[in-house]
Image (tube, rainbow, N blue to C red):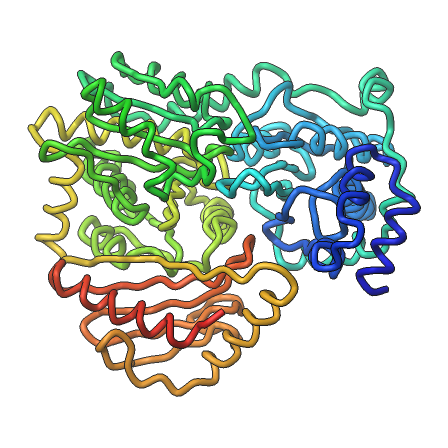
Length: 553
């Protein structure tokens, strides 16, 4: 079926009032119809993510029903009986979560759904804590408000494996969304097929986070924003638990709101998302400004230093957290004999150097926290989960402790506050700590840029450019000779699963990594330079010029 035929089918069969309104609205707009119907929304190990709206390539009650029915068929074939469900603050997130619960109930699978929105790491935790067979989180993480998504976890609390994703995809493809007949919510609830998550699970999550607490905070002053998302209760609660007395909340960004009225792109990696909070921090003379993204699995930070506020990158914040954990636990005698740090391949190599100072092994994995979770499961299987110190990815995602198998901004905020407070007691800031790390190991700088390729034509162009880059004989990038080109699309390259990633290792410890985003229509470029700050910026300028020349939209 082509996109116009699919559109006609939906016009005939869709009964949901909002979907019908959108179908009527796009009538006669062939470009919009093509973008909404040229394919089915893809499902993978990160689940699904797409623009809200009518169509096979968008998030709506029909595509959510179709996906959930496919998941239910997969789970039923594996004799699964229980699924944990939650959702973030985005538009239709609660509707989609309840739709998923109703479809599962219709299939005789008990859905445990949270009473209100909750962070993504809570789903990873809750799936394991309640011994569920799978978990569902309705979220588009830090994307703009027009997006939503559907993330699936295995019984181990990790995002699903490639094998499971392929089987679920095959099941989804067999489903006609208009044949799915979800149970009524109230009827399923009365029958016990939909149940609310018990209160004690929330309390245990906070308890498990607090187990990573190393020292009480003193007079650290913090301004916090949940960016209208799910961190609004857990983060203030844990900060107060560890002794933070001066906590200032960004009022306009406190209440959950999927429109994100004061930060259209609610990504704590981006300066624009932090602008209002920085004003609050300055007015309150806070030592730190902390922001969590809408599903509270990522955290961004700005540090009062030198008369202003310095925004740390994900790499920089991770170095501070890792340094604090290793240093503090070593001083207390609680560092295990064989500590393990797990990071993604696009995360700073400085982490490996820092870990080695304390005798810690660093395991490098593909981009995606599921690969960090997989390493944690391997440690647990070997009876070594207590050796796990921290999981770390450059996109502001961190995990300390084994309560989850996904990044957790709640525990990261707690450890960050402790770290900053311990430094303040010594007359230092996080920036001072970073400079000390650079003095010891070298001035590594990192920069990530992305190029967007939306719609059907964009998807084809992305593939064309990546194929061309893979085949190109690149001799020099950013004024640096290419020493090694590594294509992870091969088998067992660097002992990693096959992945659409190309690594250029350059002279002077510089590096360029190129990969498509797994959740957005983007090609991402991760640049590293390791000389002086001034020289690094020059290298980045030349690398960017090369990227602009090769990867034209």
